[in-house]
Image (cartoon, rainbow, N blue to C red; front, side, top):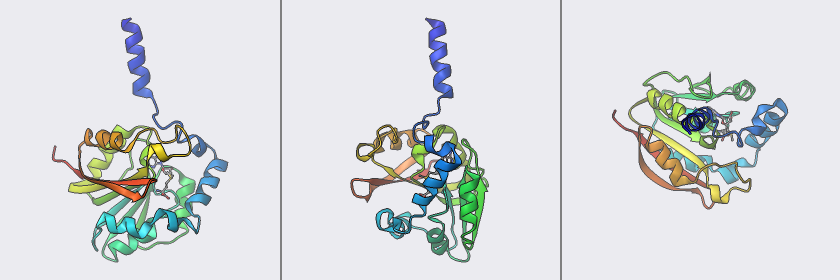
Length: 213
Ligand SMILES: C[S@@+](CC[C@H](N)C(=O)[O-])C[C@H]1O[C@@H](n2cnc3c(N)ncnc32)[C@H](O)[C@@H]1O
């Protein structure tokens, strides 16, 4: 019985919680198809990037991180919001996505290759971190949240935009409902400031503040 319990604990500790969501990212062919959807010229109508930037309350001169930037869809909007005196980090774990982002030549953007457990952002440097359609792809959410926390300045914000599990057309792709996501993030050193719809019945926005240790 004891051995069984240890086995379960070990398997749980190694589990990649987003295995289902990340299946199509494992091949270059899969990623090329995803890149085409991320860069779809009609995406703004559904994704509402200007509304998202407004909700993030970005001020000129701020440093903003786009965690899991993909092909850099949000980078032009974030770069414009921080202005010439600000800075944007565009981070992802896929080099081919970052190569696509690089071709966009967006001012004030530094692209960063992270890992599944660490976005490799400079410590204590970020005013607002965004995770747009990315949280449900984190295989190791606790480790990612710890590393994001280290990158945030005291009192800085983490903005998570993701899909409602109940509205997802692909069963298993979204592993947790909004409130479970909020609780998980709060357990990892963040305080929930607000929750609301971003795109009604599809995506929500959760805004957190980094808590004091
Ligand atoms: C659905 S895409 C969203 C991309 C981008 N945020 C957008 O909205 O266009 C999910 C992204 O998360 C990235 N990703 C998955 N796990 C990650 C992790 N642990 N850290 C950073 N990025 C990750 C993937 O490589 C992919 O680019």
